[in-house]
Image (cartoon, rainbow, N blue to C red; front, side, top):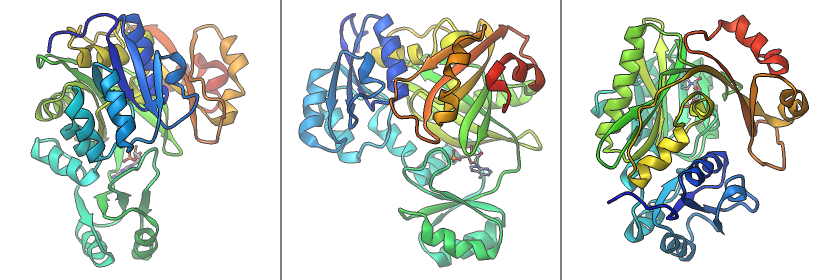
Length: 377
Ligand code: AMP
């Protein structure tokens, strides 16, 4: 395909903050976005040209949506296989349905990753309690039992520490099948966001360090404070996975660094990612611009970082209550997603704090630099 011309319409499936920030980047490049979402008054639709409010599986809406746009991409991945095929029969879908099918299913994802030469924690499929007992004996405890589909922010998983944990966790987690993963005693969680264009060109953002709180991303440090060898392994892994997927679009690769410095892939997401939000403020072309450029067939600039950065998520009512102080704190770059209801555990916005390249402080300095948000960081 030749490049999408200015004023063309990009169809984005999903109405959340990732769609909102993609739509803002698309607008700056002269494109319009049409959002498909179940939600009335969604963060993405608030800043877009058009919206279709529908279930993601309704063929009539999917068809009308596809006919109204020039190219289709996602911020929400869990569209049914039939829905994806229907969209792809009408307009280019980027990343391709085959990529989404892999990332939607942890078993398909792990088989794919290992086949592409990317290491993961040891794992085993679990269809029955007997299979779980056998897998736990083989992988050892502790281990993490996860649903294969629809898990996010730590939902759909259970830590297994003793034999007594097996049966209740197996009964609780739905839908089946499940996957058992060996527990990784990681020293750090890192990620790489990588874009691959229509022509196969690649731009990868710097490897970043991620800290979670209650299974939700809390802080991202750009760049990750890791040895050069670990960084090289993380970057090579992201590149290998993007190429093996024959990706057109954006991909986030979340990884563990274990105590020996080995890099293991936890999961992949073929879309913009929370751990790439820092790039809006610290890079000439953010992950959202790379997303739009890659699916629109535009050239990909190098993913250079002009500043070091720390990103902190604003989660739930407690963080939103700090908004006036955040706005009054010099140096905090505020982003709010337009969600009207601040539920517990809901990502409402984020802030970025920039530092000169090479001057990312240590943990104490970062706490200080985050002002009112640093108190619990
Ligand atoms: P996930 O939903 O797979 O992204 O997992 C959410 C979080 O749970 C990860 O970011 C880790 O902090 C933790 N986690 C998941 N899988 C494992 C594992 N196999 N070993 C250790 N920690 C894990």
